[in-house]
Amino acid sequence: MAAADVVEAPQEFNPSAWDWNTILTLSLILLVILVIARAFDIGSLTEKISGKRIVSSHKINGWIAIVFLVLGLIGVWYEMVYHGKYVMVGNAASEHGATYDSMFMWTFGFTFVVFIVTEVLLFYFMFRYSYREDRKALYYFHNNKLEVIWTIVPAIVLTFLVLRGFNTWSKITSSDNEDAQEIEVFAYQFGWKARYAGADGKFGDNSFTFISGTNPLGLAVEGSVDELTQSLNDEIAALEALVASADDSAAVWKARLVNFEAQGRQRAYPEEYKKIREMAMDAESGAYVRGLEKEIKRKSTNVKRIAKFRADEKMFNKAGYDDKVVTEIVLVKNQPYVFKFRARDVIHSAYMPEFRAQMNCVPGMSTQFAFTPIKTTDEARAEKGNPEYDYYLYCNKICGAAHYNMKIKITVVDNQAQYESWLAQQAPVVAPVEAPAAPVAPEAPAAPETPAVAIN
Ligand SMILES: [Cu+2]
Picture: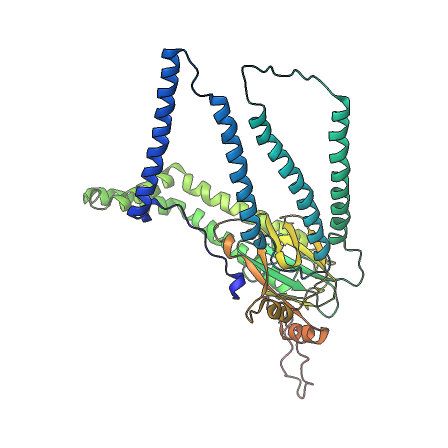
């Protein structure tokens, strides 16, 4: 990493690491505060006894407001100078990024001016118009001119900001561009997968009911879906066998419990005893069988759901067989893209900071984002002076324990040929069946009926 990019970890509040110097300084500060407070006490007591005014607390409050204002403004200046550079991750690497950055700066500019003016007035007025015995507060009821000004001016400014934002937003979420290539980005706890359409340029259909260990995206692939149905049916059969032998197993648990108690091992092995007792009780009360039946019902519903989709021939048109499911996103510079997002479990958010792009990935619906990368990974590395720099797509929604580690690399290459040679190396969802050699004898082995399933 280049020196300019090193972000130092913030100092954590950790009193156990304080040395004697720090403790001494803090104690002194505390002591000074206590002494001042005591001085005020004495002052007000003296005032009470003598009936004479010594010091006005209103005046002191006014000066505290000024001190607060000055310290606050110094803090604002410090944050802008020292941390301002971390707001954006370098220059935008997408076409709309420049518009995005300019919108950010306009919004920041307007709100910054308003912030400074209102804060200065707020604290200055506290100082200037603090209570004085010889002065009466002005009762000011209403002023139409003022109302009009502070309604119209913000309305104009906000209209300008919102319209520009709305215009840009509709561009980057639209899929109108016919030249744009589609890429599917699939989010799950905890990772990402990307899918490119194969030579046919078409994505195969999918359903969440088809999702299995070997088919993480739930693609409509006959072999994989039938395998899933088969394994679910096997599991159901195994559960049914358990239900059938429930009486026997109840007897076994009962015998074990009796045996355990007869040997007096309850005290030596309390955990084991608890487990055996629970199993014996569940077997006797029927809770054990009810649990099994619930599981059978759940799996049977799954099988029925899958069968419903499985009957849809249009869905199983093999369009997805040549799709490529990959663990890296490769883009070509200056080529427009439309990203289609899906999520498997909870809401995730695809965040590509260098491309100024972010979109929620929501289970059960498809969202999208379009952008054109304008800077290759190599160019970004040269700009950063860091030969190992890479673009990433991160999850930006706290989605669970391993959320922090949920990212996928994005590589922007210079030309189409580089992209195509990369794509050619990626395995398709289903390996194409090799044409069988011309049979020389009638007993030559026939080609397999269903193509082998090889889903990433
Ligand atoms: Cu996530």
